[in-house]
Amino acid sequence: MADRLIYLPLGGAGEIGMNAYVYGYGPPGRERLILVDLGVTFGDMDGSPGIDLILPDITWLEQNRDRLEGIFITHGHEDHLGAVGHLYSRLRVPIYARQFTGTLCRLKLDEQGHPADTVRITGPRPEVTQLGPFNVQFVPVSHSIPESAALIIDTPGGRIVHTGDFKLDGTPVVGDAFDAIMWHDIASEGRGIKVLACDSTNVFTTHPGRSEALLANPILEWVMAQKNMVVATTFASNVARLKTLSDAAIASGRKVCLLGRAMRRMVGVGLETGVLTDFPDTIGPDEAASLPRGKVMLLVTGSQGERRAASAQLSRGRYLGLSLKEGDSFLFSSKTIPGNERSVGRIMNALSEIGVDVFDADDGLFHVSGHANRPDIEALHDLLKPEIVIPMHGEHLHLREHMLLARSKGIASDIAPNGTMLDLTGDAPRVVDQVETGRLYLDGTVLVGAMDGIVRDRIRMALNGHALVSVIVDEEDKVLPDAWVELLGLPARTRGGDDLARHIEGELAEFLEGADDRTVRNDKKMDEAIRKITRQVSMEEIGKKPEVTVIISRLMAD
View 1 (cartoon, rainbow, N blue to C red):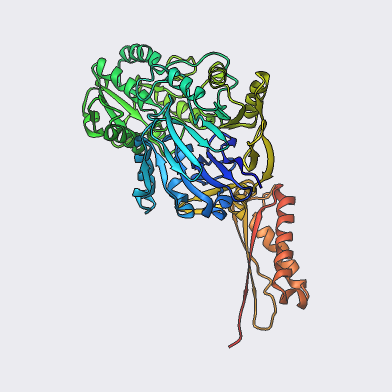
View 2 (cartoon, rainbow, N blue to C red):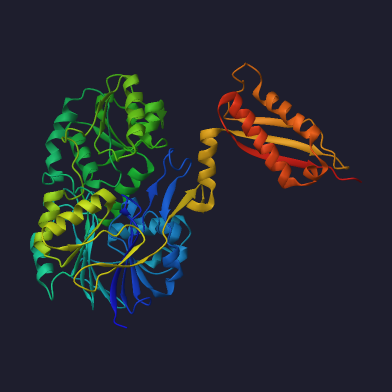
């Protein structure tokens, strides 16, 4: 059977975050494979209460591990490399990345007890990594983190360009500028571009993207105008923004203090790898607390409202001996990711209650996106002239709009949400398989499956409360009528003012006194009956059907 070229997203297609894309070439069902990126997304109290990280379910890839040649990481954002440490043991293949990204990967692996030397630091184009039928090059692109890369994946079935996250920025402050001449060469080499798998995040934004360098003057003017302590938050990985903010601080006579582990790590890795060459010296929180307030800028984590990050802790009072006061200024130099609005709003309101002046990036003065807008996506289409466009990195609305954009230019295109395997061998993409995909949850320190019921039960308890019912059966299989009920997350009183737990106990006592011997001897029947009565009484009295746990204790004769 003829060899084929396939594409299979396991995460990141139909959502923003948790990126994981499989490419394969070879006989159907026996293709050699590579994985591009292995990222995470973050839990929220609405859909995944108590969950720290959400990871792609890589069961299919694990089952086909003997066919997997390696993993390529395009850049250092958590949604592209955050799962590396947690899932490496299931794949155990070499990881390839540029130096800055590779250093972050090694830290992730080391944190989870995996060998850091599995990461192979790879130089940019023209360096080529040859794995099985794949020849892969890292192509520098602009983004909101240093050393981002697109991938050229050359196969016997044609050339694939996987953009990763990118923008067209000729002056990115830190990192690589977009090189149109190099991309023209990429498009004209050999047989041209067979497939362009392209970032879709900003496909609905109709104006051209703006350069990171355009923020320098507005941020400097803003910092110069503030009289007291200045605090700014942005994504810790946006090293260029941290440099712009710190340069403005130094120019206005302030010293810079980094607060938050991620912030310190990113700056440290930037200095270690040489992508950050002239970042100003920073001070610790003790020195920052001792200086006049008008002589300090705090650069802090928590731009997305994370409750344990430095921004949230400062809004609640003190953090590492530092506190904010009336007349201080706080800048959110970042866009709020959809879904995080309430968390960010809570911090803004808490700061306002202190008397802090809050500034955000809504007017565009203090933030530019790291993703290509629609005109820039079109420009890349026009430059590369691919035979096929595969929209990726976006929710379904983004993917569909990107598909329609490509088709309007006469380019074959289709949507491949997570789990959809496309055959890219012909003139147009063709769906050839559906792979079961899902999510893994990092719950504390343990990975659990989305279908394990843990999060479902947690949501049910959050919505409905919980009742614990305990009954005792004696040595002669006679049930004692005194059930004991403990309630969690439910009103203590009924609508008539009675004690709800005691009321449920009374109804259960009536049932237990009349229960026949066959029911009493059968734990399953007892459990079902007690659970039903407890929920019915609760519904009648308070309008809630709680989750119920029944404990049946059977006394044993000596």
